[in-house]
Each structure stands twice: as structure tokens, then as C-alpha cells.
Image (tube, rainbow, N blue to C red):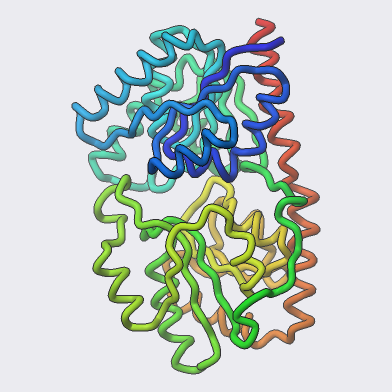
Length: 373
């Protein structure tokens, strides 16, 4: 059954990367798909050139006026589009989007892509978010969780009601798109690669601190960073431009900036490092593993499920730059053959457990169930 689908995203980058295949399949199935999101004019234009129908609804901050205006914009657009189904991703679209679709009576599928410090933080902002989550999800048609830990926390805190909830393997991995590739540049140095938003809870500070330690012992190592400065989070979680400039001037990292297609950089790395404090399911680790790169990440939700310690990479303690540096040393001390074998096992694991088709099928099934009800 063909329907009118609205996708509510925080930023167009996710649509162009981890959600690109899902969006394509929905269009190929004959559904009308409109994406309500924001991004730079260049990013939005790139999406439109790919044939996607994009409406820039901007974003929201913690300012009540900004939140009201954001909700007003998405409500106006959804009403005009006469949406049959809405898909939401990440915390702000999940909360504000579900409140709007509840008013408009639009069945909604919400993907809990990760909860960060939602339950652990005592800040006013996160206490408020917890209250809103409990209320906003009451009428949600279906909730997808990317790991058991998040699902159990939502159950424990009474966030789930009568609605269907399912476990999916994150955003899945397109293992054909992310195929193994030989190192194409920086062949004469060992490259540790960080990919992610420059946020403290993504572990960027620990990455830099560990890099400082390892550089004292190894001259032929490069610590590359890909990802944008991010201002949409709480200030105590963000990195400033001055901090980033200081790291670059110090020579501790090689900063590339924001990259839409990271495959060539993964190919030219020897190990991908994501010291995140918590994830839904890390797309970075899935992509790196699919390209047969061993990873170093934290022994935490959304990461530990992907990387098998000492088999497909190494797990380190959360927020522990000393332990992270130790795991980097272990990776450096492996022979080339040992590291390549780790990478091969990493790819086998994600193909077996995280195939993107599993995620796409789950969405198609849920949309069909909603339209049939």
C-alpha cells in the first residue's frame, strides 16, 4: 500500500549517510517521502540533487521560544503534506515530533538512536527531557531500540505503554558500499582515525589525551580526526573552536573537518578509534568493521556489542585516556598479519549481525502494519 511518509531528522547529514539506503527503498516502493530537517545550504542542495524532497524546518535549542517555533513549523508542514506516517530519529525529533504527530493524529515510528546521559544526568535539561519522553511517546505507534540496555531503561522508567517496540541492529550496515579497501595514502605512517562529532561524550578529549601519551613513544603515528564542531548539545559537552585550534597547532591531531563520504579515510587508516561514553549502535564502528579495520572503543552500550575484545579490536574503560593509550599500544604492537586478521573477523561479524536489510525490512513491515490497521 502506497503512502505519504514524512521523515523528521535533526540534520540532513544522517539522511545522506546512515539513512540513505532506507530512504531510497521507501521511494522505490512507491511511497511519497518528504524529509523535514536542516543543514547547510550545500548539504541540502546535495540531497535535492539526489532526488530527495527536502523541507528545511531549521532546528530547536533549549529556548522555549525556539522550541515553539520549531513545533509550529513542523506542524504546519505535516498538516499541508497530509502525512500518513511519520518516522523520527534522535532525541529532539522524537520528543517534539511525537507531540506534533499526536495532535495531528499521524501514526509515528520512533527510532531511539541513543540516549546519551538521559537517565544518568541530574541537569535540569535532562530531567525535563525525561518528563517529556514519558508523555510524548504515549501515542507512538512503534518504537525501535538499537540495543537492549536502552530498551530496558525505557521499560524500567515507564516510558513504554501499549505501543509495539522492537529491537533492530542500529541503522545496519551496507557491507557492499563499505567494502574492504587497501590503504591508499599515508602508507608510511600508522594512522589512528577518529570519526564523529566533536563532543566530550564521544570521547574526543580522551582521544587527544591518549594521542599525546602515545606520541611520546612512537614518532611514526598519525592521529586523524574527522567530524564537525557541534553546538546543538549542552555547553558542558561541547568542544570550542579555540580548543580544536590548540590541538591542531600543538600537532597532536590531524584535523580534516567534516566529510560526507568517509570510506577513503577509513581505507587509509590502520585502526578506527571511538572512545564514546555510550551509543545507540555506533555507525562508525559498523562502517570501519565492514571495511576490515580493527577498532578501539569503550566497553559500553552500543559499542561493546560490535567490537569483540582482542578478536575484532580492543575495548577500553569509559572516559579513561590512560587505558585508551594502552589499547592503542596493543594495536601498534600487533603484526600486520594479526591486525589484518582482526579486520577480517570484524567484517564477518557485522555482515552476520548488522545487515542493513534487517533494518529496512523492519521499517517496511511496521509501515505496512500501520497502513493496514
